[in-house]
Image (cartoon, helix red, strand yellow):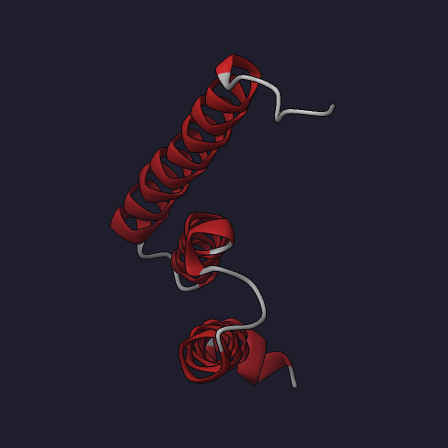
Amino acid sequence: MLQWYASGALVDIIIGFTVLELLALWLYHRLTGRGLVPADYLLNGLAGLSLMVALRGAITLEWIWVGLGLVASGAAHFSDLWRRARHRAMQAQAPAAPGR
């Protein structure tokens, strides 16, 4: 088990499962129209995947991947927060529905 961890293979498996999860969420919404809208989870998922890339780089001592993963994660996280704040601001500016 230690060899799986030291080689980064365990992180690779987790990255694979996370990608499959994101694809399954997207496919379910695409086919049924139900479930989460991709805009609600995609940036958050990309931030998580980027952190896993950074972790894999740290485990395997490939420092370029640590830096790239952290920068990508920060960018995705900031973009997600920006999108949510804009959405909330637009909701606050929208006029109330009649009868409310």
